[in-house]
Length: 114
Image (cartoon, rainbow, N blue to C red; front, side, top):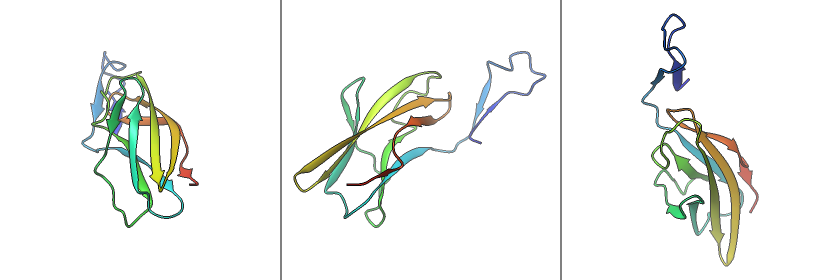
C-alpha cells in the first residue's frame, strides 16, 4: 500500500495519513503500431500534459502521474488521453481522484484498440 491511515489508538486517526515515497504513474496500453504522438489533456484547466515516463519499445503510454495534479483528498479530475497515429486522433476519457498521497484512477480503459 502506498498510503496508510494512522494507528487506531491515535486520537486523530481519521485525519492523519502517512504517505510513502512511491511515485505513481497511471498508464494505458495502446494496440497496434507505435503512436506518432500522445498527450493528456486536463479538462479543468485545459493544460496539455506530456509525461516523460515512456519507452517506445513497449506499448504503455503514461496518462497521469503524482506530479500532474494537486494531491488534495477528494478531488476529481477528468483527463482525456489523446493518441495520434498518422492523420487519426483518438481521445479516451479518464477520471482520477487522490487519496491524499497519490493519484487514483477511478474510470477509464486499461487497453485502447487503435
